[in-house]
Image (cartoon, rainbow, N blue to C red; front, side, top):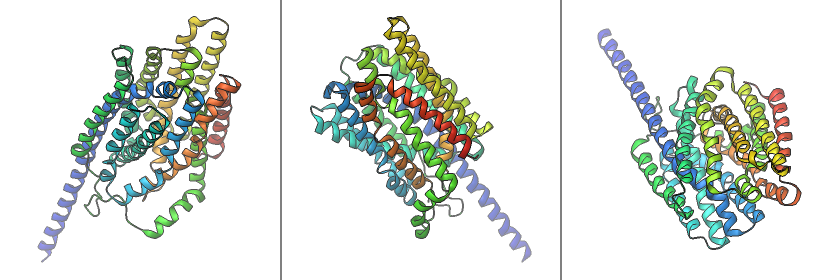
Length: 422
């Protein structure tokens, strides 16, 4: 009898080891698939984003209306996040992710054929709705397929892939082969279909070791009802919400209409804009993995402070560039803007790993929904930035957004030092 019990125990241990190995192999396969998707997305999306704001400016003929359209995109990027996250937690993450590409293609097609504001607005709504689904799904899979001790490194690796693909895409723009900017939209659609196939055949839902089923989280109605309240009442989460919402506002006052502003202020060509984007992407490629590793080693709080210091350097360089250009030192325009792009890359690469480590683990049982709630609240910070940035450039000064951003960053550093804890 005892021998039989021992045999059953050994079989249970053996089955548990096999389940653990299966789960690890699944996670490893997910991470490889996610990395290849990052490369493809970086290559195909970078030309699109490079021409997106100037494209809107050409169609509308107004920097202010362009700012309004960018703000509409921001609204769509934040408003549905909690509900998309909730669906991702309740049902299969992969099933929700499969809505991403069809919506993106529909939105891009509407933009391609846009002749008026109605087409632009509807296309922007569909495209950014797809972005919400894709972003939440992608980052949740990274978080749940990574070891706790290496999450920062894994996030850094994925953004390394995005930026490596981005450099190739930006270089493609610099070659000046494409004469009609809408062609970049079509290229984006084609590569989106490639990533869709990887999602279908290369991505699997993380396994729950206890149930052996690809369930994401337990369905606990009382827990679900309390999540919003807990997000606000938890002191740690409150500091996270305030900081990341403020960060979106502070940076995007300057960045929401940055390429449109460069086009309007300095009359830069698409090839020159591509050069600046390549400078940013190369900087991100070089420092993205070390930035993620830094967050693992010195902690998220210190890494965020380092990022904000690079941000001050970035906006200070943009101010210096304008001053020299205004005093007839136009020779320094592209070199200084390129240096600014490198500093922005340093700021982004040290920020992203620490940020994602924090916001993908706000709530242990409903990760995607809590991620979506924070995205919703961040969107409130993003909401007015396109309008504010365009208004400041047109009615006050081209430098006004950059000065405001520097002041805001100093306030962010104060929040980090006073209220953030590892």
